Length: 145
Image 1 (cartoon, one colour):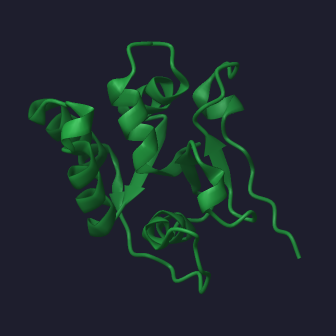
Image 2 (tube, one colour):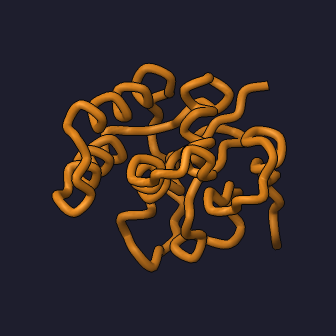
């Protein structure tokens, strides 16, 4: 069973700046590299990744940023947004939610669920007690009326 997910930029930043190889964000990114998670993206998301990961405050090497984005492009699917018709506290987060809506059963992997509607399916990337990425971090989508 393939797991499809949109990676919120905060997850990539956290995975790239941490010095803890056991950090949940690192484990999620490793799951992507091992093809346990198929990343979903579109041009807007890739542009945000590139912009944010190149910010001076993160002090990331261009080669590392290129490798991260390249891995997403190589292992992922470029999909169109599905308009949710919803408003977001931060309008730039809408694209992550709406790209996830484009693939049945997809998730948003984020460290910050408060920027997204509550009815969406999420994987919280900040829970250190999770045993495995695909089996315990994937939270099934449940519709609420």
